[in-house]
Length: 167
Image (cartoon, rainbow, N blue to C red; front, top):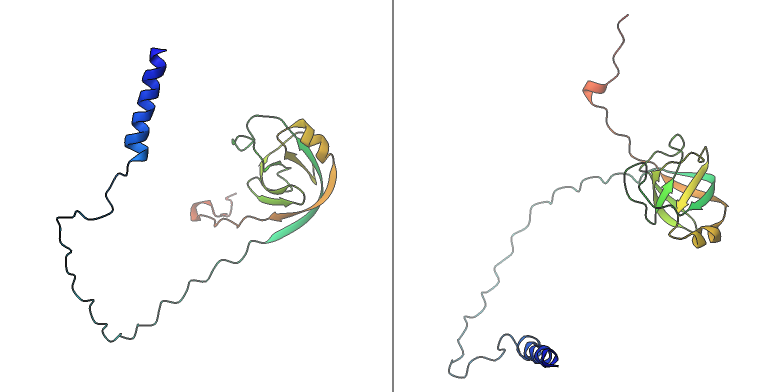
């Protein structure tokens, strides 16, 4: 009983000092006179601005490829082939068809990333990660047309450029 009253007193004290009372005074102290401020400066004639720098050309939109595929669902927990933990948006693909790391839009599922592979995924087939087995059964097996954002090609380094072989 004594500890309850101590806790209640502590809570009331915290509410009165921390939460209830204002931290700063909003009105000036009565013994201070208001300070006169200087008049705002007069606007000067504006100088003409030099031509702004030309805008950098934006990168073109990534090329999008449409594929008609078989989409299944899985609900296994763990890590993907790319090392990330599974979450909504994790899609298992055949890396010979869709490169790992590619963004994919699946109608009815949303945007995802090709981050996993699987033994049963061959050719035009993908597996979508779902949080529960009930969601997997609800998804079932569907034929869908997906949009695959192809990654930009990486520039080749001079050291990795193809050189003629010596015989």
